[in-house]
Each structure stands twice: as structure tokens, then as C-alpha cells.
Length: 288
Image (cartoon, rainbow, N blue to C red; front, side):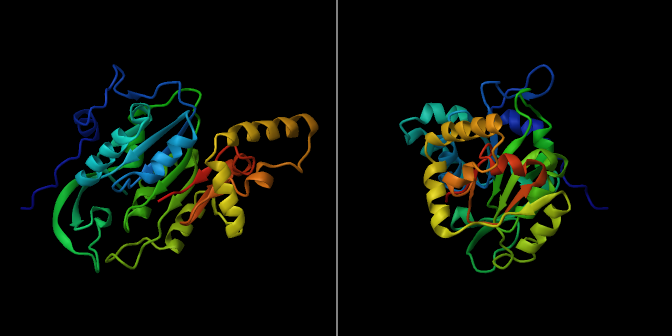
């Protein structure tokens, strides 16, 4: 008689990590935040999440990392920054792996922590393997109470060493409110990883997403400079105001920013939010 796998209690894991649950059984997101983005796979120093936070003082980043070495490194990185205290409040660290469903899975830890994966590496040196709890992203989001002012998740970026499509599958109940998805397409360095770009495209297209077609390298470079600067939101607001008052369709934020999206990995836009992306209300950029 085979024993059943241990049950994963997501609430208990988050409580142990220091998250406070209110009387309604949920973790309340303060209403001073205006936007939310999700970074899955923070690696050693969370370059992407920290870049997002520095460019938007009203942003909350939900950061997910499974490897304890990476979690500790991220915490040290934040505290070393001159604005560490402020960033700490806006980067919520979830020390749990994400996957297609809530369960336990075998995890392969590699010499370089950033290459660890649920899929056996083909060439990276393995330190060992062990079972760890995994949560579906939608199961985690069900435990969060969003402020009434936040109706969507602007951007989710995954870098999960072959497990990116698993993460997106685990967010299926929330794909309708996710505007932009950026995922590493890695299906060759890990055994049996169903994670090719075409796999990702087929899945997301079935939920109304369209793959982003990046512009020229020069325009992407210029766009990245502007999207990372504090003037972006001010200019975007000015342009939207002019368009609303004049009815002009000639002015767009893309005309000056190059792209509201500036990424290296395959990226998909939810058709329901394509106009907001075009106008620069929703931005998605990638670093690291």
C-alpha cells in the first residue's frame, strides 16, 4: 500500500514566513499601492524586482523564490541598498516554489543556485535532490485581499529553469486579470521540460493573449531608458490627457518611449489590456 503524498498547506507556509492573516483569513494588501507586478524566480539578487521598484514608488512586487540560498541573498541585497527599508516594504518575499498545482515535487539543487529546477539539469552539476512544497499561483493569490483600486496584475515575469509554463498553468484562474506575461523559454537544458516558446504561445493564446512583437534594438534601448526614469508616468499622463481632450489618435506613449514593453524573453499581452499597454498605462520591462 503506497502512502499518499504530504498535503501542502499554503497558508501555514506563509504564516511561518511572517505574513499576517487578518480575521477574514486573508493577507491584506495596503491601499497605498497603485500597481502590482509578480517576479517568479528572483535568483541571487532580484535584479528585475529591484529595478521595477526603483522606477515606480507606488508599486508592490510579489516575489517568489524556492531556493533558500537565493532567498537569503535577496534579503541581504535589499538591506545593503540605501533605500533598503523602503524597498523591503514593497517587495514581498514568498519563500515557496510555484508550479502547475499545489503539491510536493522533487527539486534538483545545483552548484549555482540560480540553475536549480524541478527538472533534472542536463549539464549543470547537481548537489542533490529533495522534495519541497509547491503552490499554484492562483492558490496563493486566493489568500490575498487586493485593494478595491487595483483591478489587475500589470506584469508577471518568470525565470524558472524549465518550469515557467508550469507556473503560468498554475495561474489559470487569474489569467483574465494579468496584463502581460514574460517567461523564459527553456526546454533544452532540462530533461522533459514542457517549456518551449511554442508551448507557451499555444497555451496563452487559448486565453486571449497575443505574443508581443518587439521593435528595433535601438528603439528598445531608448524605451528602456525612459521606462526606467521617473518622468515616464508624468509624460504618459500628459499624453493621455491630450488624447482624451482632443480625440487625437496620433499621439501615443510609444511614439516617445519606443515601447511600453522592453523585454528579452518571450512576452504575451492580454488582449483585454492591449490599449492600456499601447498608451503606456501598463509597462513591462525586464532586467537580469
